[in-house]
Image 1: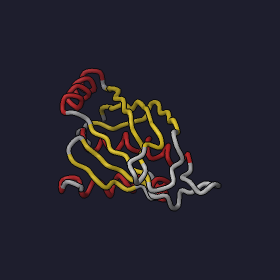
Image 2: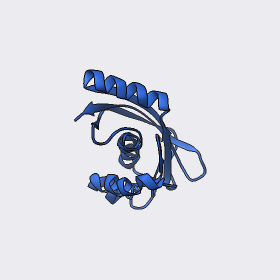
Image 3: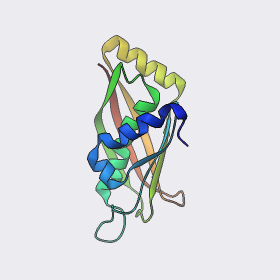
Image 4: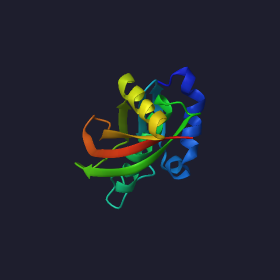
Length: 148
């Protein structure tokens, strides 16, 4: 479920990265410091009928910007990605889902550091899950919050 205060921003985020939009990435849940994102199997099918590895990577990478929008002041900061890696655990044969959340304390600490230094890193460890809740891939990355 998308909290009312995020309804407008969700559409903007989904349209910001045209290739992710073409892949069908959808933000299906957003509230303060929380997001749930899904990617449909179609049109992301590879040569063996499972989800294309690049699409799975995109789902994970895209999430760093989504949690930024759910957590930080959009008028004062912007996110960039510094590093992302993915480990494939099993074939992804269904739509894929991922949930991520930052604590209030994490957001306060990252914001404080960005205010003081002009930028602050935040790390995410993400589980990309299929429709049955099985983890198909793990994404680890570092994003950076920067002052405008």
